[in-house]
Length: 317
Image (tube, rainbow, N blue to C red; front, side, top):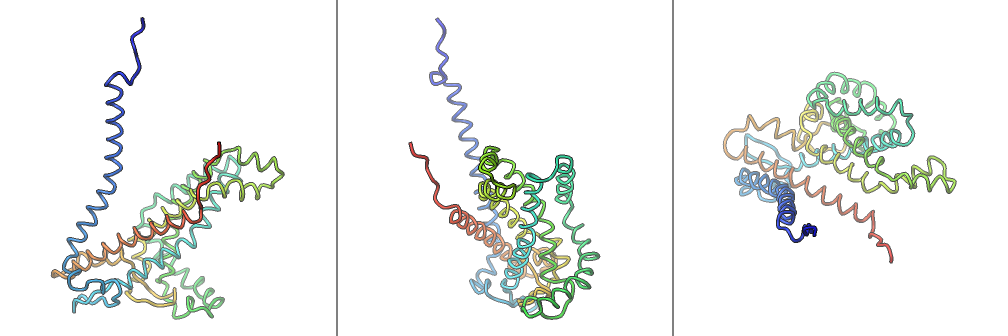
């Protein structure tokens, strides 16, 4: 007789399954533990600022290290506005590029384009910042910004003096940095769409654009939204390139031509020069605010995703 080889009657395989289950669970929980530890350390470092300013720190507009008056509102404003500008510019270009690479581009052209996109993602942010200072900002100041002011000057967003370094320049440089991330993830999402989706649409007489819009983009919308969220996370935390082109001025203005400041930029610029006890504590609190803004924005994005996706439809027996 053959020995009973049922794995349920042997402790080895069952123990291995349980061990693997617990190991992967610990790995997943370690992510939450890491976020918790980061938040705890930031809270400990910002304890003095929390005690002195409280919630007023989030709505205060003064940043005066000499008189020890600190407020985070200009930096929150700069972070959100520059990230929004980056998304407005990068998302259409990234998704259109991903659609072209997966649906329209000839085979001989796809790999070279993918290689160049990956190379753009590998460029260090400080190199992009130097390019932004010496190439992009002068071009924006001489050509693009005057044209925008002449064409859309009736809007408050495009009024005021043109400096070159500005909130709009910061948003453009961030858009360049997040474009390869959104493009790469969107391309993989579109490639994962089953071929039967396309074949069924073609069988019904759809054109190539209709197949792309109905069978591909509609099927992959949740994955594309996830790609946008990854890009947003990168945009919120970007530091060096933005610091070099945004102007680093803690102010809240309507014009996109005016300089701005972001949470990550002020921490990178001023942490080494912070003296005393309250000044470093305020910078720690800015880091805590940046962590909170990132978490809140991602939670809000997940809620939007569930709203747009709607309730899941379960197949009937």
